[in-house]
Image (cartoon, rainbow, N blue to C red):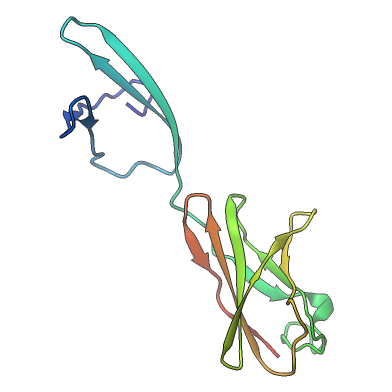
Length: 157
């Protein structure tokens, strides 16, 4: 049962003695659940065991933007004269385990690790200075459950 004992499902003996199997007929909803297993022997003795688990199949799509203080052209045009600009990441879920930014420039790729500041804002700054040219950045987020999402690419010049 995963509804506090209101609904019970019968498990079947597995291939290994003492192991029983059950496959849900429908998807279990996202969120925290308590699985309760009850076993009854031939004499009618019952034993109950509970297991807490979480289903997490959802992850928000991250965003990336050039920090407005480094946007030296018309605001929002993604032109900068800063050779080590800061990028602000948004829509990062609280259970994010890895947050990285892939930077493509001139046929090369570099992966940067984003950091979460004391105010809760995620950002990334290149490890070295950038030469003139176009750079395309994409955020990749992986959460504790292993769900992965990528941002739309951002190109800055």
